[in-house]
Image (cartoon, rainbow, N blue to C red):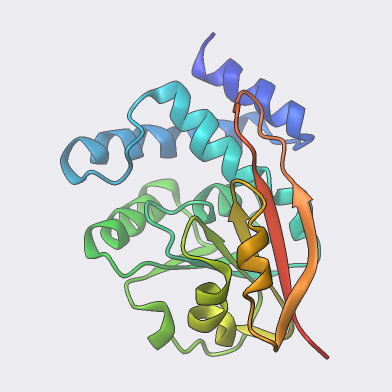
Length: 209
């Protein structure tokens, strides 16, 4: 099966309608990631089919749960995941990507240029030191840290009614139990990623009233 067909089938399974032009840009991003990865070791995944499944589709599985989010911070985003795929598929979403490792932030800047991503801004800074001009509707992380650390480092980025979105594998019951007293789980969602034989969960956190 071609990468194009694998991506199209996966997006259909997720219920995400994406024009052919956007699917092509997603694959352009995957190709750029594979190219840079040969020199800069941005991701352990080097198989093009796994890039589609483990990175593109895995990132886009959260899309239905971001309804109402207009501004999103992607924390510890590495090679721009999930921020770049989300910005490609949702041009109305303003994504700020925060990555402290300079080679990864440089890759994100190059991807922004080559993909023409006007709604995506990479920032090479430590998340706890980043002070946005205005708070974000949502703050997302993908395998960044445990939940308590996520709240400690990135909680200040979310507005009063903002949400933190933690992308996890297995349901992190121990991490949920260790949350600081000022935050709680708003909801927990099981994510079904096409062609990925592994558990995925999205933990949505909010401030306690």
